Image (tube, rainbow, N blue to C red; front, side):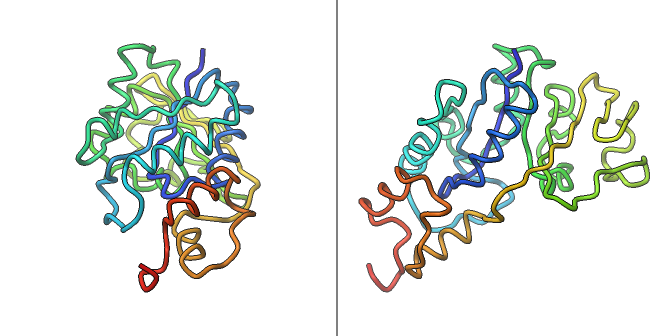
Length: 218
């Protein structure tokens, strides 16, 4: 069974996250997806907002309505501190074969993967699925690939890269709303309507717990 891994701060989880997962799960035939909220992204400055427990609950609300395929995995929150994807993958490798694991990341993260802890280990212990936007130019030659990746490329064909590590990288184009968690937070604080971008259960929880309120309202 193919197992997806989808990490993030989910601060808050929004329809863009859900669309990305549903699209990848369908196109890749994933049997299960581990949705992994991070305790703290090492490459991001912490932002004010909900507690880790509240982000976990928001993530469960966002994905819980879509069935058993999506499993909200709290291992990074339990570990605490800085969250490193390699640690999460190695933990999952205790249960799954590397050939069955598919780490789902956006094209922007793919370009900066060399900044991640033990990125070479990631590329040997899991396959990668890169989500792109319409208009994104998938690398068509070795010269167009990120510098860190070039020594690891064994073969490539259109949107499929075979690595010397035995793993592979595939590109999937998303056709969805252009939205980010930072934009949603900004709109919530300014009172702009966000129902188009948030599941109802997530929006209700945010209102009930008065999350993302304007600093002047507290």
